[in-house]
Length: 439
Image: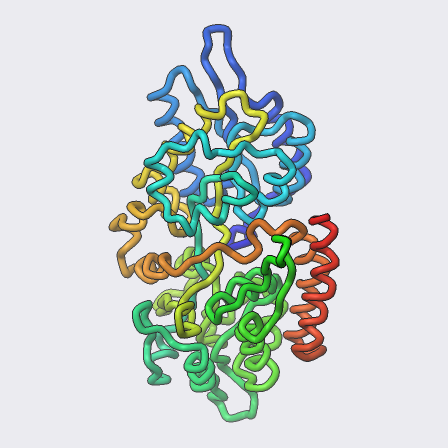
């Protein structure tokens, strides 16, 4: 997922808490007052506070439709929700992310929001974001928070190297990025061992970033066949960034092999110690950098390189979403609350709390999100280039990711086999898995 993995709770305990807290879902009192359950996965202190404050604000203004905040966790949320859906105890309003909605939507657990969404909400979020939750003839959630992948850079090392500093308007190309990484890789004490690597690719979970970054070079990875069924494709455009990472690790030695087993958080101590000049990380990691960086450490946020042509800075994202259970007895009330949460000022507030980007056009203009401080301006500049992750709406994707793609990418990056072997694993095993879900 993102930096939130560092503070996840215990999944088993939460599963019991979730079922107990959401038992019965929405309720009606004798005087006609409606109470809706809102399962929130906010975890950062500022984000939890923002969500609870908005719930209080709603409840004060809507005495007949009250919202009860239920604290959840990202730990094993898919299994927890599946249990609550099958048991008829799902919360009315569900916080999740777009990549997790596919099975629930096709399984009939989520309400199609199409007839309930107000025009102001539909028009306030770009079509590319709605595409992450719209398939199979319905709209299964409101995409409200998103985060691109960016480069977090050591400003001292950048300045010493003399390389050109990229901007959203004039980014590095991937080829330029490779050359920059070579310039930043140094044996500073002359002992024959690398002291500073140009980049550290944290590939403990390699699939999402490998697939999403393929969009910058015109890749898709998942395509539709003539019958409209999903299948895996892995041609040159799909593999270009993956091959670059493998070159940096195994040929150029501008990226450490050790990074392949690291999470994003694992790379930060080495970054602060000057061992890595550039870190490709999700946007929300800026909070960890800001909180953990030693006094006097200079860092900045840069856009990822461009693949050139019409795709340029494109990358895939799976936004965080707000959905409504199909079994909710008060769907319009629930969607009205979603619309309230996604008013531009409120959406911007939630984004600041999570160090992420809002999806709404007006929310992205919030002055707190367009400041250069902590790289916010770079993030909002990238927002227009974000596209639905290729994994959205692909039935069988979780199994393909866990059983086929994760081990295949890990072995490829470690040099166990070449591109042909990777393609065989991703496509051959992948199509067999996807076919089972599309019969």
